[in-house]
Image (cartoon, rainbow, N blue to C red; front, side, top):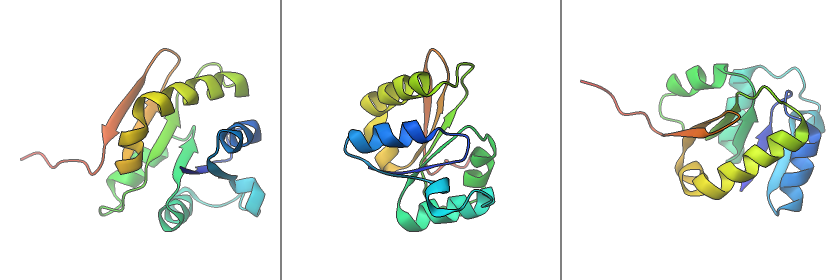
Length: 124
């Protein structure tokens, strides 16, 4: 799986993903520390990457994305230490890999994670 880590995500998480056999990059790796969220979304879409972030704005960006499917894992953790983020991400990937591969928003907190598959269905 291919990942793009936003600035709030530790580089150690990217290292762990690489050790697990994933293709993972951090915005810092490419000198893109100031890239606006909309451009991060575009980059993830064009490179077929899953965004890892602490930024809640990505839920709104996806809702307004006109059907461009980009999976996003949003961390809502009190304990933001790399070891805790890795532990929670490991659980998410074990439990929800198929949904993430198809397109999903995953919100991760201390005790659980919630998966919302994309594209969102319109209510009538």
